[in-house]
Length: 338
Image 1 (tube, rainbow, N blue to C red):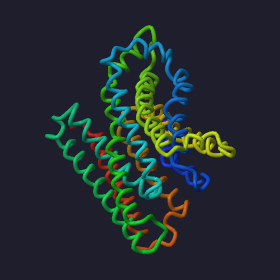
Image 2 (image 1 turned 90 degrees about the horizontal axis):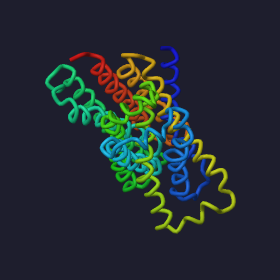
Image 3 (image 1 turned 120 degrees about the vertical axis):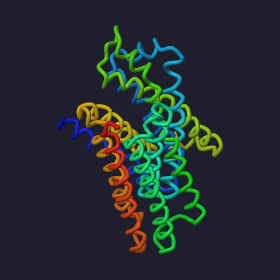
Image 4 (image 1 turned 45 degrees about the horizontal axis):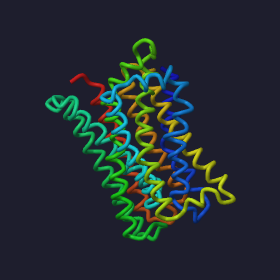
């Protein structure tokens, strides 16, 4: 159990930090020049390299699936990829702190409620379902408080974007949270993949079989995220930036981001089952709360709130506390039987 706890903490630190290296890219680098390689590394290359080590005969498992088995994970992975892409855009619009707070807040709320509505709608007639709704509502309040803090920062003269960029960035961050929540649906529709990966001749234990679903979701996400970056590279005529001199540091930053991003997924995937029955509740609460906190702290370290008014800074702190409270309520709801 100790190992599982350590892995979840490491995963949360990675999840809240994968956007931080983007702050060190050379000024003037087009968005798609950094994020295109990042999405390629995170959703194509790393799963291809690490997947076979995590899942016994991964490609054999994938080749044995019927369309009905792989369509759900790949399809919802495609939507998750759109969410990850819009999260990358929101980093550019509103910074790390606000983007993480809004994305994770919305993602937690939708990622909890929507799968329950689809797979176990009867839960909403119980105490458990009521607590899930309360926790989701608290997370949404945290998102609203985050937006208010950003507006106060704008009014207080801190470093920020133009007002229209602030409004656009908040909207993009909310949209990214809704779409990123589709990752939970990819797993919700991944039972067929889990059974296939666990059955002979593959015989993967449950924690390894789950990475077969992860790989399919990531590859589905590559279609949308990498596709959008390819579109931007074409529309902005920036393909040439990928081969210009001095691009090695940009690729290194993109790779570091991808390692942190996929490291978060891997650590949670391995660590959560090690906590036993606590994995879904306590493990989830620890992971999401610490990831939100880490993302917020990284925003402060990157100087995003330098010069902001005390009301704005207190606002984002309050938003963080509200979001963590919402996560804890949801974790408690997951822990009770009904």
